[in-house]
Length: 319
Image (tube, rainbow, N blue to C red; front, side, top):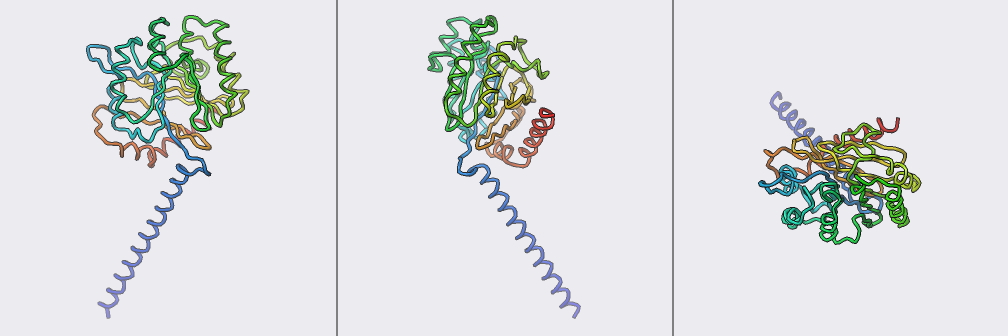
């Protein structure tokens, strides 16, 4: 009898364990399904992702590397096919010379993703016509500033780097006119990209260059505010910084790469809502494949980073 009770108890415990495992499996499936629906259906709108990185140029010769070594390794490990494109927010070359463009293009040509370029002060040299013409030739653009639509969303590249030594009222009006016309295009979200972090002084953000923000606040920001749609402005003239702040309907993101291990790029997930995920560049000793970055971006670590960013976004900037 005692032996029989033991067998019954053992069978009952085994059944309980299997039942609990089954419940956990169902819950896990539901969780994955919900996360998948959030990422891929979004009420009929297909989300997409893009990446933003600033100040990525590598060591000067004789090393001859196009990008900071850790950033190059990061690009090779990251699942770039998940991205629609990458935007460099300035300083992706030392002096905007053709041979530097050659080095950069030789590295990125094999990547399965498009690149867009925001001019930085390094890329335009001393605002020299030669560097500017090189930029236009390599980007196949008529103007250094540009705008384009990706689905329903408007992307605007501003050439504010060229204003470093000539911040005039006429320049401000020129860019305001360009921005005003661009905003007339039908759009859902608007993303603006500059090199200089014109909001650095107001919010106490580290920036490589102290630039007069007057034109930005008098000519550019009022148009974004009056547009009344959520706007996201990225600036890349900083090293190892990732700062997100908000003023009215405009969110400002400052992020740039340094030669230390404490840098992050911005991965932006766009659907009916916009998620900005600071994605770290790991140290040069890291050896991993693309599955690691998918885990970091979609797994619990990414959720924790996102919650931390949301706290900063809503808890600090909206008080």
